[in-house]
Amino acid sequence: MQSRRVELQPAYLLHTRGYGDTSLLIEAFTPEYGRVGLIAKGARGPRSKTRAYLQPLQPLLLSWSARGELGTVTGIEAQGQPVPLAGEAMFCAWYANELLMRLCAREDPHPILFAAYVSLLPRLREDREPALRAFECRLLDELGYGLRLPADLEPGLRYRYDWERGPLPVGEDGEEVFAGSSLIALREDRLRGAGQLQDARRLLRQALHRQLAGKPLQTALLLRQLRQLESAGSSGLAAVAPPATDAKP
Image 1 (spheres, rainbow, N blue to C red):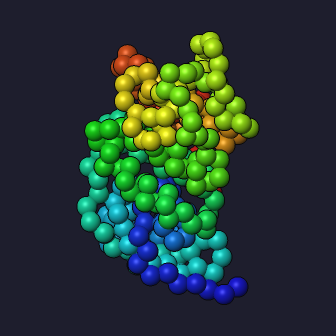
Image 2: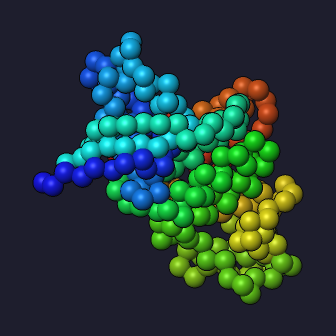
């Protein structure tokens, strides 16, 4: 198998775990190579100079060599400062990371989705829920499962979403019914108000669960439990689900 060398590829870390005694297995998201699995040799060692860079939300320039599915990190540099997130905003970033881990195959590049991820992170500080909905829509679009939200939607009508045909006008309310104004706002990334946000969250929850094949997301559950403990209401994450094991590569 022919070896490959990649130099200074922009990247964000999605997930890390121990590998052997002193190394890390990292999952990184890049514009030109998509999600990649890499071994960072010695990164957990007491004298490691790279471990400080291997942090969530830190923009990186990664270099690696690879002969098979797993590559080996050959260089790592910080590309600017990490986005300063805390609390629920950090949970939302972890949620986006888990969606990318679960739904994006390795070595499947999505430069537009990478750009959407970069844009998402600073928005999470002040505009969390609309930002997440926009990112979820872009993720589904890029993977070929985008929502059908046609230009002829009427803001004053109510719709049931059919997964084969898209929104269909209906005359009654219900759990599966969405306001036309909400669907238009979702399409145009201008969600505002509790009603529009709730409709968008319900629809995207259904869409994501279809692609997750019923397998739950840990981050959504953890945030829901945290907010329940604080008696603060719902999490605001679309794919809220029961506990799960770590996403597999």
